[in-house]
Image (cartoon, rainbow, N blue to C red; front, side, top):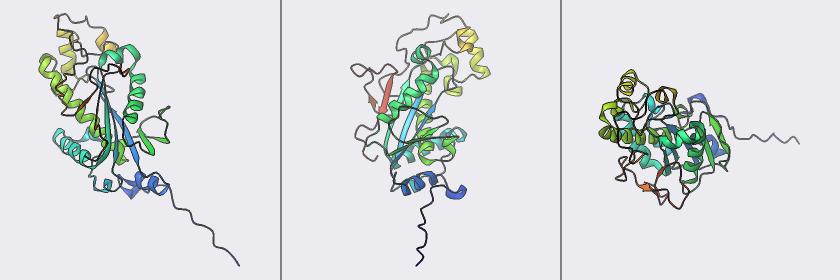
Length: 266
């Protein structure tokens, strides 16, 4: 008697599977709780690097809308997407790394460390991790690096939205302190207007001196006050709870962390 071959479930998402296709495939493979990690501000020459980790509720993530590629969304749509992600997130954690730390240890080192810390801050912990762009060692969990992950995986897109909105709010707050640079418009990226202001006024404490276009300009010719080098006031400009804002006692050299302390659904 011939026994029909066992047909294993497919573990390759189809192109038409939508933004949650990867998470559904991983669920079939036994990984129901999947976290996405992404950052905002990597290419900026001023302001912090913000890294976010988000784990969407497996029972509700199909309700996520079209939030792919947060950078292509308008600010108003990103704010709405942020609210949607908060409503569907099982857990989220944000790490804010100030310019001084980037100058001291290097951008890529800060980025990788921020991803590890953002993941470690999730409660409950996920079973699998999707990262945007490049693989990250030392996560302690099975992980997959995805090219343009924020365009193909819901949890990575959600992390991209959280990181981008958080950073934009922080840059808007910095604009009130240093209005001459126009941070509210360009968010610290090297636009022509920003470079003209940098040439005119020199760098402020929120500029990354390790960047060539900043380091070549005389530092702080206007005598801008260097207090609060992270540029992040403790009144929480992002509208999110601050976790250990001083970093004392926890070895938090890279700056502030924002999270949902209970890990409960928002």
